[in-house]
Length: 279
Ligand SMILES: [Fe+2]
Image (tube, rainbow, N blue to C red; front, side, top):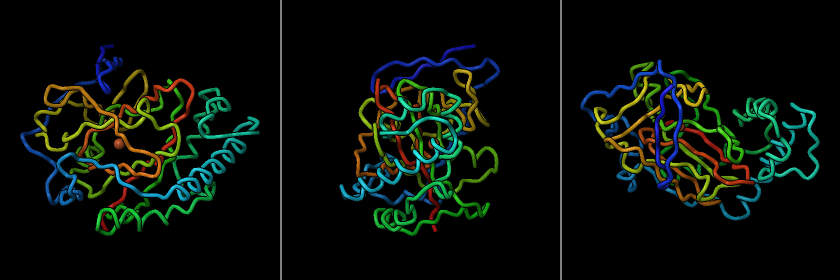
């Protein structure tokens, strides 16, 4: 075991990684270019992300209510937990074991499933308006439908991914750069102690400055599909997004993000997480 460290808003965090993992840098090339990054022409491209107004207070309330009902139904279906008075913020008071939590999140990975009574597709035109181009939830290469994930992150838990770039999966496995953009919509428990950390401008770095694993990773004994990035230009600092309720965090698929530790002591954080392709 060895230890890697990151700073999230200035607070140092240590994580153990398996010794078998090797960290490598890539070639002297910037992967985010006009033809490989669909947000290249956005006014915020230089930062790599933006927090954009998205839902009215009423629409946000409806979203939260719909998701609360849906998650409650999954808890009822998958476990024997009593759900009287259930709320998403207090999820961790109801779902108190990892075993039950894993049963639930295996179902909340797909918002298009019958378990959800929320009209997800109504979000699409809104996002198209913000970005000023058409979006699709079908991967043009695999023809698979993208899943919208309801990410449930319990306070002080390990329910998060290590720092990574979404684009590496395509680059490493398929040797191509898929044209998608990432969205993250806070639903509850999203505060300056739990919001998603990003590394501003990290998509502009040459790959020979990014030290990372290839093809998955193992951090704190958990196996991840994503690689873990140990440092970028010799740095290891992330900044939490300041995205608020009613807003959507939009970021380049080339941007380093992750390590969304929920440092709240008594609030579960729930966010919608998904990617869409340029149509
Ligand atoms: Fe990601």
